[in-house]
Length: 328
Ligand SMILES: [Zn+2]
Image 1: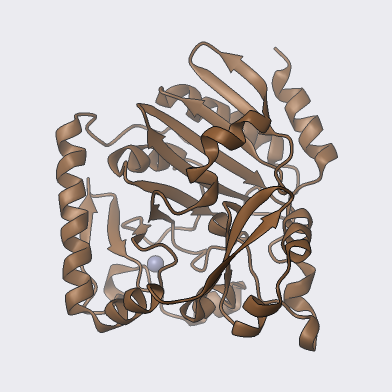
Image 2: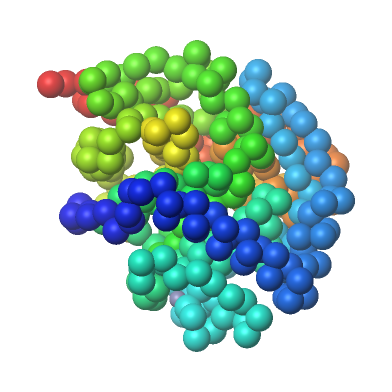
């Protein structure tokens, strides 16, 4: 893993001023960019429903505009043939952004799931890899305390696997983030140190490891350990994973979902058996996106539990990883 130096100032004034800039960016984009205006307006009236998945209330959102992501072709040939929509030179003329420390652009995502949804691409067109950039995610979460940051691996839901980026959605929306203080009671400590805790959730429908700390460095070192443990398949460009991260009460919480599959069986099924659900961080955090109405209508609690179980690493592998991490 590469070295990761912090590029954000830690004083609270800079995060306050960033908050104002982000709010202003939303106002500007929603009033001046038709695509964003239409999709944010549509989001206010789209249907959603709650399904209880193994005791966890989760949302299903019928969101037609997300077909661009759920059905995205992410094979190398398709990726090579399209202009990268995260590169500055290819972005729509109406799309404005905030440049943070010459490293990342904060953009309004024109295909929202959250009432406030940001895309945060790196300034250069480099592959989507978390190695060397996990510290950036922590810094961005701290700089944007009203948002949950997320990272979708290149084979775990990122629709631009060729351009490094994070996304962020407003807090108070994702069931995992909203309910974490209650759901945490069903997690056990894997590692407990004075400045760092690693938890493993026992009953969540997908394998989930959670790191908490008020210090940046232990999170980076423990993420490095975890990454090494997960790095078992030499065919993958990086261990398959999704990450969510939030800064609250002067500490970070990082939820890590280790995976074994990009898309579940139902995604490839024929006819009425098919469910076009391609899970990424937001789905695993409790908001499942169905771009097609028929899927929204028919999807059941059992389907969601099966999808999460299929894409997750096995319980045995999670046990082995936790066991290794506990060794002194
Ligand atoms: Zn690009």
